[in-house]
Image 1: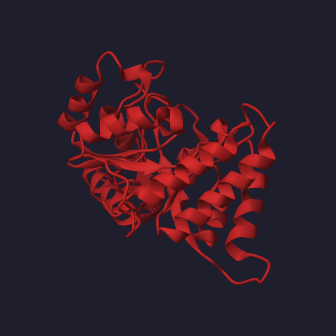
Image 2: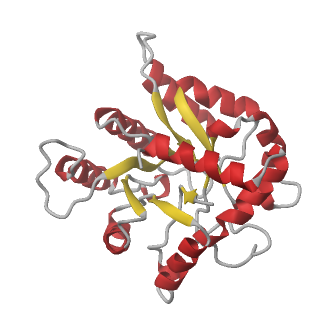
Length: 274
């Protein structure tokens, strides 16, 4: 079986002591495609170094995470813009050593940790959707405690004042909402639900929701080093745990884990072009 982890941060400091062993365990578990979501400019070099060492399996993204939107948000947004301009995504890109990016993300809104820069978060989110459309890339959406604001940005951006639709595509990372919420998200374009370790938790509401979301609309992810699945909950997460998430999803969907692996990997390949 071959799996894709569509949201993993192996470049995080949590893996400094054993990064190579962790990534080898992922390969041994059949998790052979890894999407590296971006955070901000301070993480970029480590993200790039990890990608360069594992470019046969890793796929880069670029973007500004909502919790990194602060007083210097303009400089951080400019960093994203410049990386895209210099990359192979741009036919005129000329920045040596800049990789191809496979998504804009992770981007979105986060009102859980702080709402001090919520207005700026919304502006940054909208600007990065513009970039995704300009470069024909999917987006990876992070949303926490800002659902109303997220839908406001998507409504204004996708449908606009004229009422003309400008559809986008992407994945709603760490999805934990209702089937109705996912249905609303899909009105903005082709979207997938990113399902991770939370689905293995006792009484996880998303398990019931997934009964009403088709397998064609689901991606597997870990968000490592966070959101570790059972039976490792409480420990550091890693990509080799994807099969545990797949096994729980196979129970919910009433199909084999082989079916889960095949379909979710195809979904990832189609969405990200990997």
